Length: 202
Image (cartoon, rainbow, N blue to C red; front, top):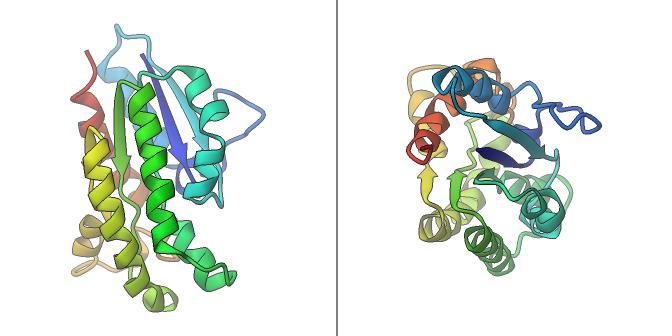
């Protein structure tokens, strides 16, 4: 059973790209360490293909080489936050119509070639310097939810989950900058994603 994780820095999380078995220090590593003992009789190959800074269009460009060439049984994908971050921080306009087209093409191609696609929703926690991004991010999220739920076998809604928790707990417990997770945040992603993955393991 080959499970491939695809995404940006939250997936990448410092993985050694020269080492094929490197899973980084984030939710992928936490999830792998939890999943393998549950299925001791199953040969689980877990691959991390996250690349920090990637947007949806970047994943589309490297889809064939970094995903489909490996013929994974399951692809777990989280993407979308950088399209908003780069709009505000780098002055790169976010065209929501073009975003929707690229995002749908990405998920459609995945679904056409992979047995199981699990989409992990991107999230934005209430860090003061990110509050100005919320309106545009919500518009992007509406697109992500509509298309994600159309193509993915499982859609895990993290934005609502994280923001619900930060109503009573400081967001700093889960992310120091509102985007990249602390170990506690990574555990939360892993613990929820693993439930979605297990539904599709024989």
